Length: 231
Length: 231
DNA sequence: TATTTTATTTTTGTCGACAATTTTGGCGAC
DNA sequence: GTCGCCAAAATTGTCGACAAAAATAAAATA
Image (cartoon, rainbow over all chains, first blue to last red; front, side, top):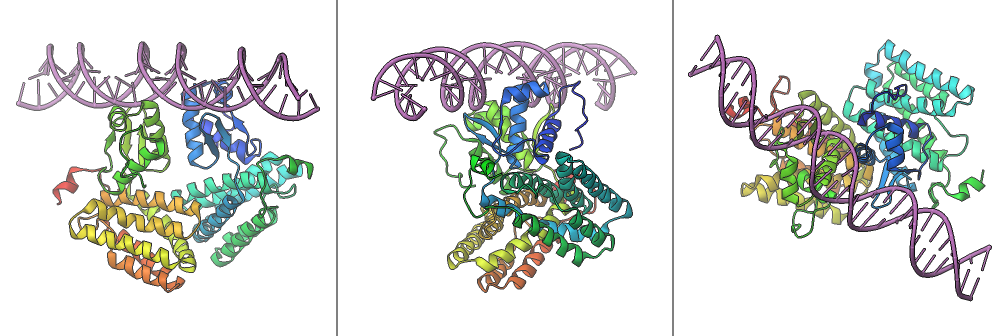
């Protein structure tokens, strides 16, 4: 997800297009249910349909995009069950990830994480929600990378992006990103190499996010009018 | 992975082709480094190149296939580092999966798991290695499904297939599938709803598999002659 | 004979055309 | 105003042609 400043001089690679769409999801610029027309993306990225279709398959495999035969590609709209599964999976994986990170984290990495938190807070202070929410998610992804297992880090990355969609669907207006305070507390536990505290804080953090989701028990339509009228 | 008896009357769907290749990997019929020529697969499955290329992207996303630009698709050849990452990821995820399964498993599901173990043992007794190794892996996948979280189950399924490749590369002749005894002990712990024992046994089981891998500390070439000569 | 270079064949990557399906808009009936 | 029908437009799915790259075979050279 580092291709955000890429100039559109040469045709974008598959990975770059995937990253761009990922980022748009993380920043809530692409909402659940949004249609991704092939020709629009071809024009946007200056590539052929073959490439776009390949990117769609990649994103579908990561649960970010839903492919409907003869109807096209849409940003995925998680169901309440899926939301619960994702959060449970995050709790299971991220508690072990954070424990490992607490064991091995370096001072340099602490600073890097601190920069994510600070950057997110600064962005939120100037109502730059997109930047704030993206950095918030990237804090978790970075943490998973610090833990040193690329397999688990890839799972976390996928789960964080899917969480972004879940929050877009089921979140309230106040819950657009993680709590800065909770990230700071996590960072402190990591700094102290306190696995138990870090683990407990991560559990609490994820449960907190999940609890703020509304109507997770009820059936809602993707991006439906009822949510909009309930402003 | 239930499409093994599918007759080739109608063109295979993407999912069916994916499943068939998955199964071939699980059964060691497709070895690490094996090339998957597009035209061969087109002929085998009676479909066009578009579909095969789509299937390749799916399998690449799951770490089963490596796509090399201008050179084609190959069954992935895990490195020692990747092997360690996969096993660590399995330990982290499967210990939580087995704990959840111990909490919620039903008598019917116990029987189903028992069938996997018995089927694997029967296959091994008649030197049907392919069947034995496939059922051995499917025991883990089924267990993950019993735990009830489809997100984690999909991760486990991917990790099990990748483990198959790892064992194909780094396993000795005796370690072609899991230990029936260890699976039975796991099943007993599940039957007793003994989370702690189930968790400990799963840890031990995965560590046992990993320990039996040879030369994980040394550099080896994919599917190289040295391994063959060391028969 | 072994190695290097060149030519040929094979395979993969990309594109555009066409078919198939879905969506949209217009129109008439109620 | 709403609904249903139908045609047109738009979009997706598939295929084959051709270009590009890699692999293989043949020829040339040391």
